[in-house]
Length: 117
Image (tube, rainbow, N blue to C red; front, top):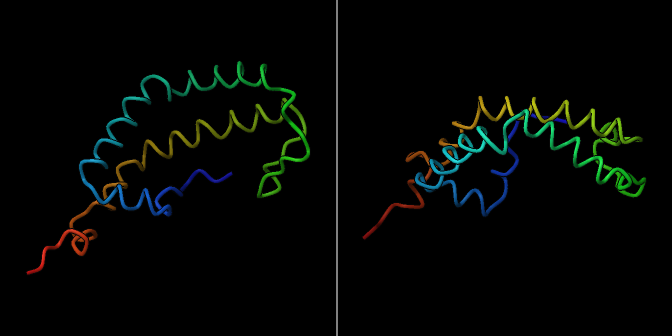
């Protein structure tokens, strides 16, 4: 699984929202707050264990993922995959969350906020 990109910026609704500097700043600030609690790596890794104990039987062959290497064949493999991915993704977002500001930069949104007579 790739951890090095923000896919949500390709969604029209999000693309329009991040043009607003206030919204973008709130997203960044809220992410930083949540990393101290609910999105804290230790909390998430403990939660993964609890969640997989509860939903272990949900691994079925009819829920295949793309790319194929993401498909797991056991509960233990699924837990390992998620425990490997979550810390990597969190660190990547920590290092790149500020890049969301580029979508609300004046030079990028000028054509949307420009008033003409």
